[in-house]
Image (cartoon, rainbow, N blue to C red; front, side):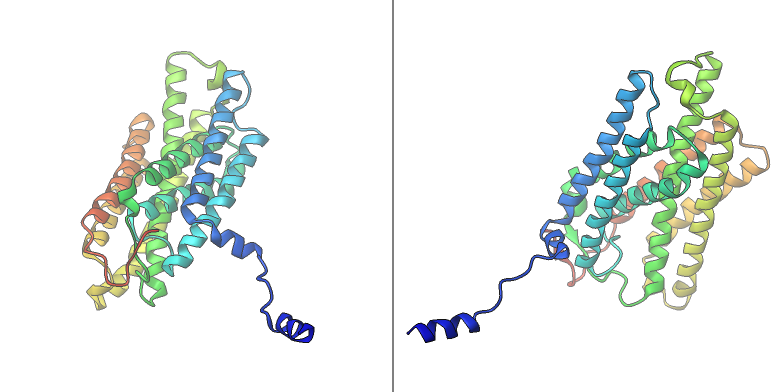
Length: 302
């Protein structure tokens, strides 16, 4: 009898080992994204408290919270990407999350280059708003569409670049808002307090031109990719999405051209950049609303 028990113990399967990857996958992607949004919001609130106390809004603590939120958001998007078998761009929720991630990615890369103490403060606010709004609207994530790009990596690259360019426009909107605030402080002669942490109006204008140029260039590459496939096989992309991206590209190109020719300057340029970003967000909602019914491969969200 004792020998039989020992034999059964030897045949019993080993206990599963909980790896880090398995632990992460057991937590839903939306939970990770809620945590990331909370970290971005904490970064913004910490910066606000610092401002109210007369200090700099974007210190090491704010930057640490932003980096922590970025890492957690990357985990959440990675889990969602594995679930949908591709870049998570299948519905409005995923599009807004990807734009928020793109804006933070760009800030992490160029924020130190611009040496802008308030850029992280405003970016954390925008990212938290984009993430929280998309998380709070269940209809935006009612269904997860899988394999939306088929087996064509070029179509997936087109979509990723297009949405990433909208993230560039998001950062452009933040610098434009800062430009308007700096312009107001100069006109009202309020240069003390937290206005003193704003960059010069010339630096903000230069940053805006660079960001707009980068966004238009990235969107140009995205449209060039899709046109190569769409002209040969129109079924590779929905016409409404291509038209929406072309409208945003045309507006961005026009704004950039007018700025370089000196016909759209100062506040008008800043307002035009804000309208461009708002239009980009609106186009995503409109395109997803008019999307054709999900294919049979679509799965309901958990």
